[in-house]
Image (cartoon, rainbow, N blue to C red; front, side, top):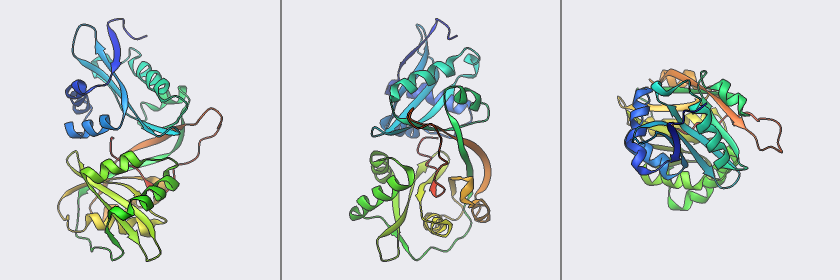
Length: 280
């Protein structure tokens, strides 16, 4: 049970410094601006010690219109664990999400709680990062232009199964978008922005592994020696290629879904809708 001295409050801007303390305690690379972007696109809760300003736990829910949402930034202070705080935060944010299907990326430690709350395993997300080695730029990838936005939104909706236009427009504002085009319309896109220790590439949406490599190579070319992170579904089979380019495998997470009640099964994550590390 949650202690009577701890209460849940709506996550607001004044809680960001406390949230940053928790992510640093957990060893996460998020900067204050990474938290700010997550909060701008999301709603959620913080757990607070009564009569104090200390943030002991966080959770955010990023809605993609009315159908799907992701749950992210689930952290509980090391000193407050074992008191049911994680469960209370999750129950609150699930209620906030309403009838939406939910997705998250779990650690092995957190998976049992999520399973008890109706989530099921849907795949593995692998984190690659490091200093980029030399790579030749691809020929069929170019910077996205304003006229590409509708094609990008349609590609992303088809791959992810939800309308993420607010997220994609935010990524275009703070970072860069690139598109893959063979002359018959757009066939893929990728995003890059500053994150943590350097930059992160994602999401990446492509029809196959070769197209995914071309989109990744576009942003990696010219970044030799710079720190870059890419999170990808293990099933995408890009791990060996990323390692060869200097981005070694450092961690993995468990992709989980909580389907709408009317849908009784969990579908696997789309292979080439590479994980978006907008939030963590």
